[in-house]
Image 1 (tube, rainbow, N blue to C red):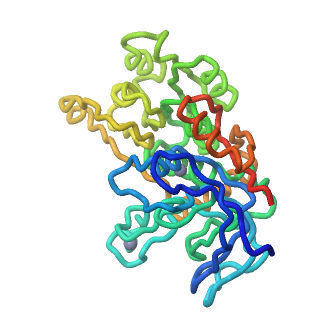
Image 2 (spheres, rainbow, N blue to C red):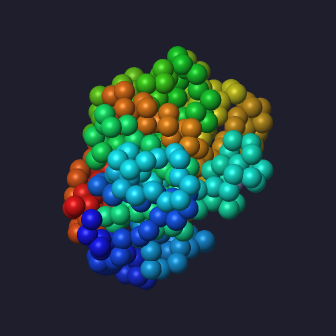
Image 3 (cartoon, protein in one colour):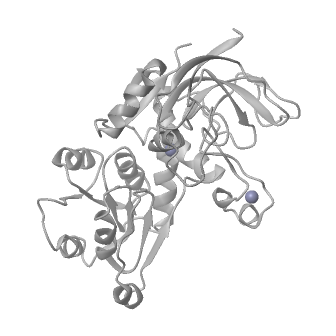
Length: 345
Ligand SMILES: [Zn+2]
Ligand SMILES: [Zn+2]
């Protein structure tokens, strides 16, 4: 092992990331060191580097929470992983294990959680330290570049679909067929749901149909009353919805397309609010809920769907050195699917 590693570092908010040579970190008790081979790039990394959110990370830090690689050292007391295993990092880097949320199976809501690439250095480096109890295990049968997007995008949409409470044979509406949405379509189909999608781009609708969507709608060309059209096409409305879009209009549309008793789960994060019609929410017994990444168990299940060949994220591999160009392309919405960085070992 060399003694230093290359990593993309946020030295100050809004500034380009710097590729630095840093000492390889040492795993503490309960932690392991991973030789990161690939890392997906998520919109959250961009928000982290810009300091966009009210609770900010502290520069200098290394972003990234879709890292996949091999365990090369284990800290004191680690029993969950050993050298040679494949593992990754995730947004939920760790949780406390004893708060009311951790005790009730909702560890993603833990107020004492640590976040990969945010409060803990992440996967935009050639090595990273993870908590052995929380690091996603990766089976050795999978492609490490292809599995990276599952570690945030995949688990996020998988959990969001579970939270929609749509059962096999029922309709789900997926709003937005971008980086998250095209993966959501595949999970929904694999989970036995009937899929309808809404996007503003016919090429995305075609991608959705390729992945098994039965109905696709263009929010621009379909014009007004699209919620009524979706209700008619699905025999009374979708049973649930998953909003991955960041266009504010997607939110009331997803609610409007629900059949009575339906649930919409929100995973996209536009900075705005949306109007909610109280009368129909009450009268039709609708549920609107937020869903944030997933627990360790959700992650295990999301990876298992992928490992069984049911989920094929669209992604492109680029070197770590191009991290700033990748961020620029994200801001310009030029990316199709997901970018996975090769750490260049
Ligand atoms: Zn993410
Ligand atoms: Zn907790």
